[in-house]
Amino acid sequence: MAQMNRRLALQGLGVTIGLPWLESLARASAESSAAQAGQPPVRLAWMYVPNGVHMPNWRPATEGKLTELPVTLKPLESFRNQVNIFTGLTADKARPNGDGPGDHARALSAFLTGCQARKTDGTNISSGISVDQVAAGGMGHLTRLPSLEIGAEAGAMAGNCDSGYSCVYSSTMAWRSSSQPLPKEVNPALVFDRLFGASADESRKDKDRLRRSVLDTVTKDAASLRGKISTGDKRKLDEYLDSVRDIEVRMARAEKLPPPAKPPIDRPKGVPASYGEHLDLLADLLVLAFQTDTTRVATFVLANEGSNRPYPWLKVPEGHHDLSHHGRNAAKQEKIAKINLFHAEVLGRLGRKLAEIREGDGSLLDRCLIAYGSGNSDGDRHNHDDLPVVLLGGAKLGIEGNRHVVFAKETPLTNLWLAMLAKAGVQRDKLGDSTGVLKI
Image (tube, rainbow, N blue to C red):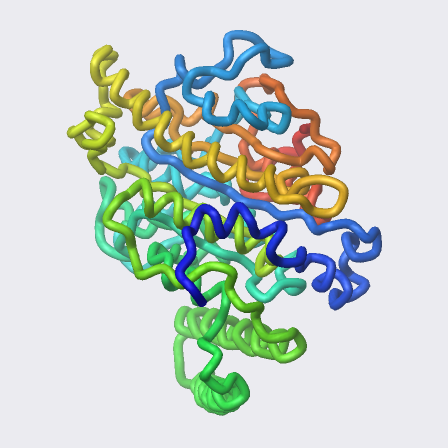
């Protein structure tokens, strides 16, 4: 494929290739309410920024209809009618609750799970199933990938990263179960491969046959161990076999679907040296994943919780985490605000691209719900109430935009996640510390 400018290629996708959701709906089973209604499917994504935000630049002055966006969220102006800013939401399980320091690790691990992370830097990690994986369980069987986990900052999956908490908690957003974190992919080239599969010159049938024989052997060998191992090891074995079964199901589903479409963009070379370009490339791939209906569920960690990345191109040479402990120093707060604005620009670009892509009787953004926020509010206080949360999209899902909605204090963040699931047709009565489905 000839080299193309990535931005131009993606902006032209709605014109240069057909909208694949129609073909997907035709293939989908009667379980898909979207297919029955003849409407494009709903997509859900959660984006995370670390260390809280400078709240005076984030929170609107008044409740209700927005007359203007706050400074940090100005990049969302072109689609303000699909923006909702939420105040009052709380991640209680990010608080110590008797476990002492470790707010950064808990902030990310509790953000989508609503569960208290077990304080350990060993292998006995524990959190809870995250909302994205609940969504994947409800609609992931309709797409090639049940979910997509991406991020722009690598993180360790073991070791002590925050006051006795395993590094996995501060670097991982998605959890398949309480003991199964799903690591994010940071290399855009590998994300590309996940979206479009193996190269055309490889025989998919041969590869599938080899994989199936390996899986059969692994399943038989593992089952033979059950009578020889402890209860704890049986649990680990069951989790392992669940992973094997998941691969088998995905392989079977892939056999019934046509080969991946020829990618409309060239494969990325790897991880860009520029952090901004890295974020933009991942955002482009996320848009592409939704547009081609390769997946309907995604998580995107812009930087790990507690990240101390500097932003010299913003004239912020200090580390982000260090600055977040600003002690109300105005110069430090100004620099934090610059970082917050930079991250919001990534969200703005993503939203604009989704809004520009036509799908059915509206835009792709109309049937997307993109939640963006942090598990910390003010990084200096390490508080987990009044979290900075914004929701994009949903115009075709009955969601009114251009609002600042203030909920009662201590409203669980997970109540919002239940509402997003419901909009996607995935019914769930409880998630972590939820108390009900939020009215949005």
